[in-house]
Image (cartoon, rainbow, N blue to C red; front, side, top):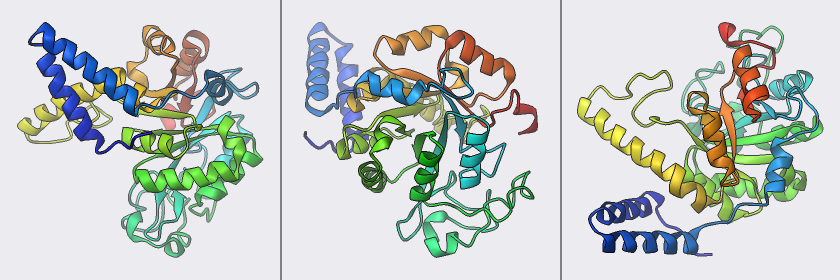
Length: 332
């Protein structure tokens, strides 16, 4: 398999060809041929769909055949990304957990959503500037609403979390925030050490390069792209990321390009088995669109009772939630 270089540069070339392709029939043919050649040379095929079904269609759990995944281990019910959260998710009959992978300054893979330790622990500063010995001393429950129930929880290593999930027979969605090469390397080791992960987990990321690197490292791993439309120009609550009108509009253009790339190029290039999409953009037609391409849709983050019933009874697709109770949104 050929190595792909800078993904953004490759996409830029493809987009230029797309622009040219709108000018004439000849250029359209050139664009189509170039895109086809690009995919043949660089793409990874999807893993067998039966493997994806094993990960996302559990026979037991709270969803009755629909995978109900505890977001960050279930951040409403226990301190997020901790062993306590994994155990609590199991007690609450989650079928799986979504866990965030990050690295300390000395390269130890740990569970952490943010790039700093300020929000969830009694420490401060960038995680990437703290050694593992320093991170291990932090209290990961001190700022949680149930800190008295889970006193002194530590930031766990990736291996500790994997072993805990295997012990409780939970599927795992590894959410990789960055560090494509490092993440692919440590996850490859983890899959070889615990082969059960091939049928009970998937690697997910907003960054296509992370997924492509994972497929390079081990093409047998089930993978998923995570996507929220307008994520480059707007925050999760819809407010603009940038004060400058010029920069905001430029990012909106890039958002359109990224959305097109996710739906027409990147999913095929990476050979993903699932698409993790923000809940506001999912419909029956959208689920069908991806089903026709052999790709499962997983919604996030589903917290209200109405949303949960909609996903389980109407859409019949897996979803990620902050808690396993009927309705947790008003309290989170």
